[in-house]
Image 1 (cartoon, one colour):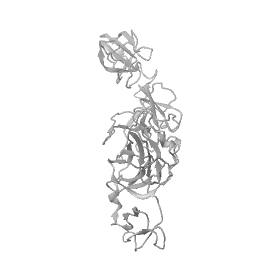
Image 2 (cartoon, one colour; image 1 turned 30 degrees about the vertical axis):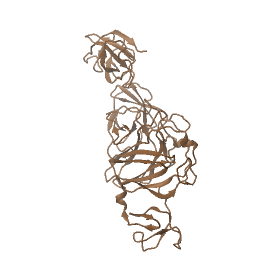
Image 3 (cartoon, helix red, strand yellow; image 1 turned 90 degrees about the horizontal axis):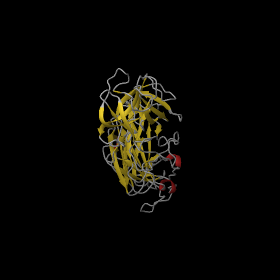
Image 4 (cartoon, one colour; image 1 turned 120 degrees about the horizontal axis):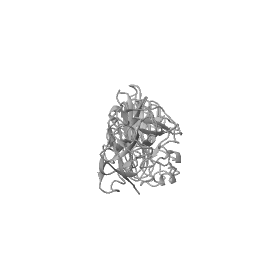
Amino acid sequence: MAALGTYCFDGLNFSQASALYTDSTLTTLSPDGWYSQGNIIRQQLNGVLLNAQPCGTCLVACGSGVDASFSSNGFFSADIDLANDTGAVILYFYMGSSIPDGVLTTYNGSTYNRLTCEGNHNTYTIVDGSNTQVDYSGINNQGTGRITYVGNSNTSLLSDSPYNTTPSGTCTSGDKPQNYTYTGSSYVAQGTYETVTVASNEIGVNPSGSRVFTMVVPKTSASPSTINLLIGAPMCGTFFRWEVDCPVALPSFTASAAQSTTACAASTATYYFARNATGTSSAFVVDTNTTPNVGNWVFSDANGSTYLNDTSTIQYYIIGNTTAIGVRNGVVVSSAACAGGGTNNSPFFATAGTTTLNDGTCGNATGSLLYHNGTGTLPQVGDTIYAGSTTGSSTVTWSNYRGMGPADVADGVVTTAIVNASGVVQTTYNCP
């Protein structure tokens, strides 16, 4: 991170000076590197200040991203131009396959360091430095203004701390990271170094492999229009990729008020969510879900200013009188069919296709929402299956085995069934 400091120069102003010094007698030259004052940035090289540049050329435009790979370590600072629009600024990060890196975003005097990832609480988990699962990266790092480290789990991040050894050439474990500043086309070394200590609560990584992480920063006014992104990479041999979307209103969904059970209920309020993304190369592939997936951030406003149920006690929100999403600490941690009440028929999910084998769809995804008039969670022999939530809806039939499960998830099939022309279940098979 570029460090604030007091320097002296030998001219009328910073733009016209020929060199920077660390003392008022102008006897000790400042280290070579990039320096800025106001809207001017200049590089000092071999003790001489090079041509002044407007800092606007250093900004990264929102809607784009940056890749970086270094054999050394470092703290990498970049400023992003968000223009004058308002809304939620969504940032995506991929930290490579093996070395975790840290993230800290600063906007309008506030810092942001909480992240989730695609598949969080579903296929994948996030753990802190003690290998304890947490709801999101940085959950115990809030209010500190410090970096949150994400990416693949690597015990060396914590065991090599503190990083306080003066570098002597080739990067080795425990070396101080050098500060870098993005100058419009690449990160440029500043010639200054940071002493870094990593704490367990600053870590939120994937123990089974790095994912794309998602951060949301609210921008509720036209100015300021610049956001700073700091990537902390204290371990040697770092690689990272990030993208910053321009401010935009988050997608909305309607659901019930918060409740302590999964009982079906009517949708009475509008909420908002941020989509996650996948991929290891530019540009990331952003999900297209129209309602929140497990692992998504959810909010009560379109700018992403207020997380929904930002507490450690789970609350449920019923979508479409069919699906109960469980929200805890602002992130969706579960999704399943709501239970009883609110509809004449009970919801469940089925596979898109059928097979002649009774176990042919076991292990498949259940993505089609259907309903049945039975008393169990899933249809049993003799129950009738409908396309809608009332008994006045049309019935559904299939002559081969179709998979069924309680939720719209991958590998969601629990049982399979054959249904006759009247929609009545003829036979079922329980998947192993």
